[in-house]
Amino acid sequence: MNHPTPDNDVSRRSFFQLALGWLAGAFATAASAVAAVRFLVPNVLYEPSQRFKAGKPEDYPDGSVTFLEDERVFLIRKGNTFRCLSAVCTHLGCTVNRANKGYHCPCHGSVFNDEGKVEGGPAPRGLPWFLVTLSKDNRLLVDKGETVVADKYLVV
Ligand code: FES
Image (cartoon, rainbow, N blue to C red):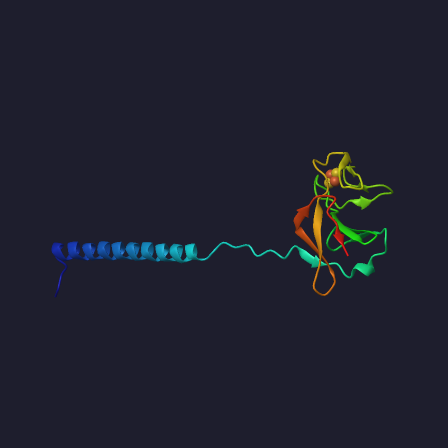
C-alpha cells in the first residue's frame, strides 16, 4: 500500500502551484494577444453620406423655397441660381418652418431672417448654408457636410 509521504504532499502542492502559474501566464498571454489584435483593427465609424441628389433644377419653380423633409433643408431657387439652407435650428435641433419672411423655430421661438441669420430667440448662431453643385446626370447635388457662405450660389 502506498501512503502519501510528506514529500509527496509538497510535490503535489508544488505541482498545483506550478500549474496555476502556467494557467495565469497563458491567460495573460492570451489577453495580450487579443488586445494586440484589437489594436490593429481601426476604430472607424461608418456614417451615411451627407451628400444627396435633390432632383433636376427644373423641378423647382423660379422664386421657390422648397422644404425637403427627409433631409431637413430648404432648396431655394432664384432665377437660375440655387442655394440650400439647413432647416435644423442651432439651438436644440428642432426643424424650423418657413415664415412669411425668414424662418421660425416652433420649439423655443428662434427667428432667422432669409439669410439664415438669427434675429431673435435663444439660437446661438445662424442656419448654415450647404454646398450645391450639379451632378454629371444634371441633378442638384447637396453636400450637408460642406457649409458655404450665404452668398455662394450654384448657377445653372
Ligand atoms: S430648438 Fe429652436 S429655438 Fe430651441
